[in-house]
Image 1 (cartoon, rainbow, N blue to C red):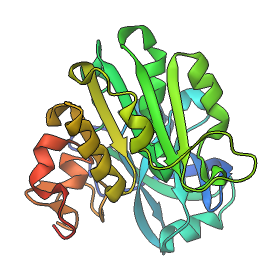
Image 2: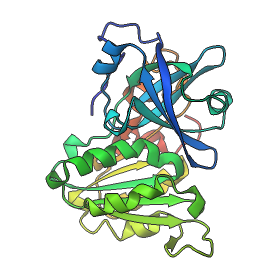
Image 3: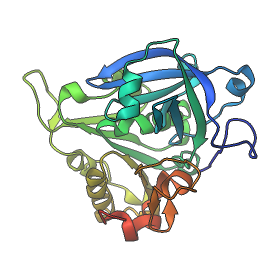
Image 4: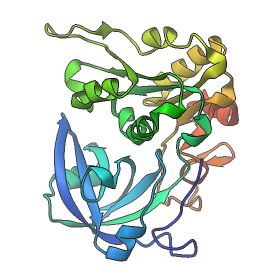
Length: 286
């Protein structure tokens, strides 16, 4: 896993947002849209790189700033993708903007998914709801280099079929060598897939735990059950990775708002091996 601070050099001011333009907005599911954001400065745009699992700080003048995971790369279109649910002050304000509007961007920050470290192994990605967005760049990286991995499986759960994120990409992922298993909590009349929690299909894909690396992102309660299932199947805690995103504000580990035991989620995470955070992971208030 790697970490990158700033959009220029390591000594650049990490607090300084850079002007960026919203180039496209794609509605995904209710209250969720993907914003493709392009840095205004051509040099910064050319230099920008991120690791799957890292995040940017998205800034709206006069409103505030929010940490948003990168959900797709520049090979898909102009700029960088951020898939955002409108739930707070900043994200609600973003919802009112249209393509062409200027915002601020700083990043990428944090440590991402250990995609390179998983070469030669089976990889199981487990996502719940919007948690698929931070995992999507890992999906893209794994499929771009598919021959270097064993079995690659996505287990994805959502409340209802209408809440399934990136549903229109699943067939393509399957054709490129990923086993995609989808479940919902509540089915409608047209649904023909699994109904239930993600741990049900997960049990069927952990047959060789010694070969498996597990990446999981979603509600913390879901991730706790995923971790328990993986450990019960014999997967080592150092091979189970969780993405934690509590109250990240400064993105560089100085403000202390995202402290998690001795760790700072924005700087030391948001992706952690479970073995590193096991002492605190099952506590509600850390």
